[in-house]
Structure formats: C-alpha cells, structure tokens
Length: 226
Ligand code: SF4
Image (cartoon, rainbow, N blue to C red; front, side):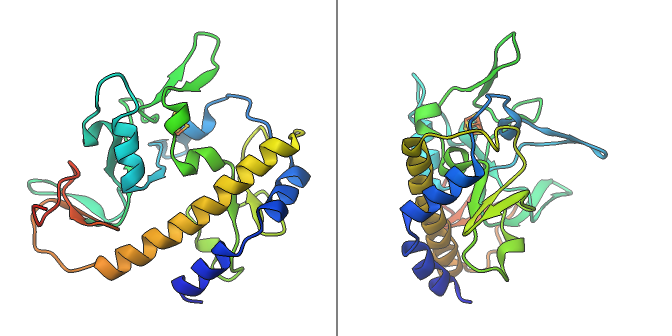
C-alpha cells in the first residue's frame, strides 16, 4: 500500500465512526502526566519522544508570553543520530518535542499533589491531542506505527497504554477527539509524502533534519539558507 493510497483512506475516514470506536473503548484523562514524561525502563530513563510537525513547532514558538527559540520547542528526532567525533551527527526525518533535564516534555508542569499540566494546552500538537489513540489504515502496516503496541482496538481505532482508558466519555468529547485523530492521520501522511519527495542526500556536518519543508539544522534554519 503506497503512502498516497493511505492518504486517500485517511481522508475518507468517518469522524462519526471514529467517535463510535472511541466511545466504545472509553477514555478520560486522569492528568497522570504519563504521556508527557520520560519513561523509566529496565535500561534506565528513556526521554519523552513525541513527533511534532514543523508548523506545530512554529505555533508553539508563539505559545508563551515571550517567543521561544526553535530549540526551546523541538529537537531532532534521535533515531538516525549518533555521537560523532565532533558531537552529534546523522540524518533524521522528524522533530520531537524538546525535553527538560529529567527527560520530560519541556512544556510539562507538575503540581505538588502530583497532578500534571501542559503549559501550552491550547496549542499542544496533534499527537498530544489524540493520545492514547491512533488510527489503523492498513492492518499490514499497523505494527510499524509510531505509537507501537496497542492494548485495545475497536474498528480503525487503536488504544495505547494509558490509565484513563475504559472511562466513560461524552459524545461531544469523543467527536472532538475523533476529528483530531483524523486530522493527525492525514497530516502524518502528508508530512511523510513531502519528506519523501523533498529528500536529497547531504554532506553537511552535524545533524540534518529532513522535514516536509526541506533540510534543516537542529536550530530549525534551512540548509539552503531560504
Ligand atoms: S506539549 Fe503538553 S500535552 Fe504534549 S507532551 Fe508536552 S506537556 Fe504533554
């Protein structure tokens, strides 16, 4: 199945059917912050890693009282980047939300009682708006989706590990989530197609991010200077 065929299918998704599936699975955010924090695993702490699109980075740059630098918001997705003689080097194909010293999302704030909050809630990226759900367009490629293993599935909607699953959700909220889920599925494929079409080999030093707008340095500036 080509990316173009997947995009066609994503555009044809029924928001009503996605909302039915979300209602059947059930979800209410408990504000535990698990989806915004580093993961403690057997091999130590794994940094929070969530994809953010270039236009979303720009929106987040303007989300605070003062404009954020690109690097305050995003970092090159670490896959494909390795430590070289003169620092990190390699080519990668996505941006990830920036993390703090603990490996949590840079926008995550935790109150003394342990409840979490997103400091850019109104501008948070699609991946955050739609957690813990993803869409299955094609069963054969479902396993390769960025959110990994699913713990539940209803029709085209997969649910990933989250303590808020199984809780009753109002129809209005399910529809809002479903609309964001469709938007994300379309946006992910549009991004993937543009990354593929814009790709060109580079001999630039350090880290290069190939995104839908071209080749960029870690500070978001374009290699071609445009
Ligand atoms: S942007 Fe907000 S919702 Fe998304 S991971 Fe960061 S703190 Fe969580």
